[in-house]
Length: 137
Image (cartoon, rainbow, N blue to C red):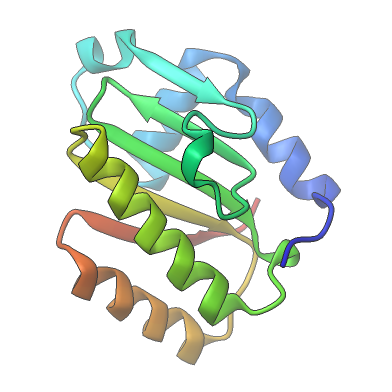
């Protein structure tokens, strides 16, 4: 299912070494308006925080025991529709199991428009607190 991490994604993930970069990403790229105090409890999993349910994410970030973010490079996906569907479901299950509020799956790279729209609808159908973001690293 997964291939080695591409260099662009690896460089992008390296920016999360400091808390300011995480705050900027969460607020500006993902649109979350978490209060500053929430970021006091930020955990970064390289690759994951919760290994019991890892469908191949590259990195996970948990903000304030509320928000779980899983990131994956589009380049690694062999079957994007199936792989992302599994990741969305796994994220929902982890969020619920650990009492978190929201789950965001961040796909780094490009998807064709029809696939992106289909997967966005799939995320919305799972739960209003689950979001898929497709961004360029």
